[in-house]
Amino acid sequence: MNKILVVILLSSVLLTSCWDERILEDLALITVITADLSDEGNIILGASYPEFSKGSNEAEAIIANKAWTTAEGIYKLSRLTDKLVIGGQAQVLLIGQELARQGISNILDTLQRNVEISSNLYICITEGKANDFLTKAFDDKPIDGFYISQLVRKQERINELPATSLSKFTNDFFSIRTDPILPYLILKDKEFEAARTGIFVDDKFVDSISTDETQLLIMLRNDGTSSQFTLNVNPDKNEYATISFVDSFTTVNVFREGERLKFDVNLKMTADLIEYEARKIIHNEQTFNEIGKKFENHLQKVANEVIARLQREYGSDPIGLGEYARPFYNSDMELNKWREDFKASEINISVDLKIERDGDFE
Image (tube, rainbow, N blue to C red; front, side):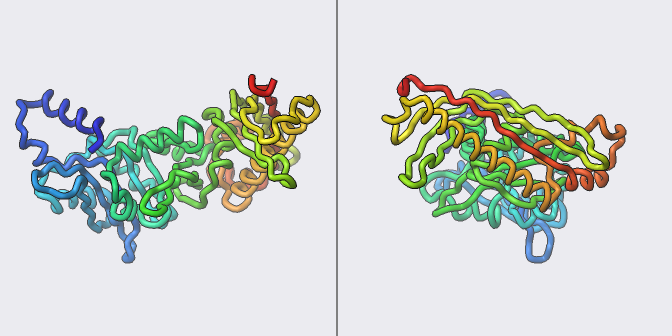
């Protein structure tokens, strides 16, 4: 079992009562909550908690039941175990994509009103059923929310995933000017991969985008600077180069042309060239600059394509361009009006990339 979990659990017990070696055996300390759509159209709510009982062969116990509401599902979980169910240690909420497509605001609202559940609870969308990530994954390691949250947090640190908490999603949802995004987990060979980002319109999951697209999306939102990017700069010879981003900053100019809004978005970045297979030729300044231009053109193309697709197909605004359009609307701007205007707007994204020579390439 995760060492951090043990420390937290023991600290909680020691601070609240005299030590009793049997008390942990009586508790179901939930670390993962799952939510799926059943065939009947109601919710399948599940949970995972560490198994402390002596003689148990399982490191984690999994319980699940069907319910018509989230509150009912949480209440009914206690019927599935002889232990006292505690939700205060829940680290991650996994929501199956089928349920997420129908909207998740009711689920999140119920959890936010539950005084036991932390507002820092991470939320992730899963490919297929969320409960499969508990029942099929991790043959060689315990299932626990601390492992999943650490994985998501690590991907957040290198800006390949948005680590979105319950409070963050709720804030974006209630804002009519930014659509939420969530990590999208994929189950592979009894392991899961945090490799994509779930795109939303209001509280409904509509699509997912790749890691490369996510890196650009996060920088366009000014939520951080990605770690690195690899590109085949010479497809004829299959030569790859890798840059490490140093910093980034996005500016947005908005103006109206007739009835149409126009957004000029500029993403300015600096990066170091840290690896190139044909490094012997880049001592030539012209060649070095050409490599930088190839990265710049590629990143600009990817950024424009993904934002245009999300805008035209779904009317999703994950960058938060509605925030920049605020001066063109009354304070009580209606969501439907903004959606209509946004889908018809023109968005032009330019990328300015400056690549510095790393010491190895001087």
